[in-house]
Image (cartoon, rainbow, N blue to C red):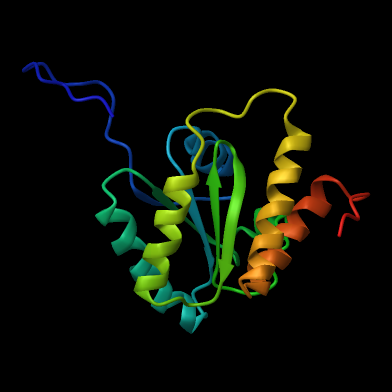
Length: 176
């Protein structure tokens, strides 16, 4: 974050910590932005009661983190493409992106304490910069390890989401 200490106005607008996005803007709003700070993506719909409960909770936690993490909200009724590509089958679904790639996820309306733990875990694990070129195999190995850890801790929803993402990028991956 740059701080302008001179009296001249800065040409760069402040980064929005919480914003609504679309399938078209996903790359800029999530992938590219996650190179600077981790981004949580909240897939929701107006008719979803748990979504209306979770969204203000995530917003509160993201604002408390003061720029260490951001939130992008995507209405799946209006923007179904990215949710479909990520294998979202139930909402609310929250995916964490860091370093230009998905790194974690959860499904359901978590209480504030759990959302805070999730955000802290994503912030702590975020890479320092953009991913290195040619590291797809390493990313797959990291994702598989995260999925296995999720299984070990009983978080089957996250494990299923991560395995789904791996299979979308590497359909022949049948590692156990």
